[in-house]
Length: 150
Image (tube, rainbow, N blue to C red):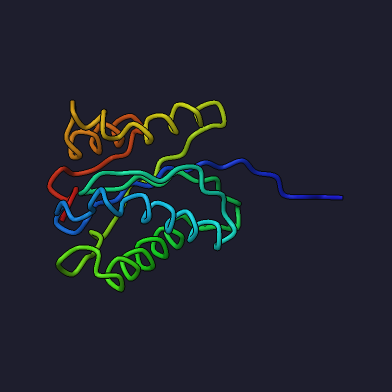
């Protein structure tokens, strides 16, 4: 009997609109859980969600019937609605358009998990922009710097 077999792990990174620092630590964990729930409800496997006030990292296992851009669109849309419905920041919340998506092998899962888990420590040494450019370069993604966050 023929079957489809796949092992896909993706980290998606996206920023708050205009990289504003709107994600407050008092509700960050609730947001992380909400995003994990979106991923699970879409039939995918959340691994870890974490970030800082101006951006977020989402790491998940993906089935081959899933499209990264569709799932990311749903995560961003549903989570921004959640944030705005509960009036978590004192102004309208939105994610910046676009995102970075990076794939990993099974042997890298623990390393990526720890990296995302330790975002607060990592950003004591590097800004979000530096981190994002580093991820793009590590994964050999071509980009023009002037379009990174527009």
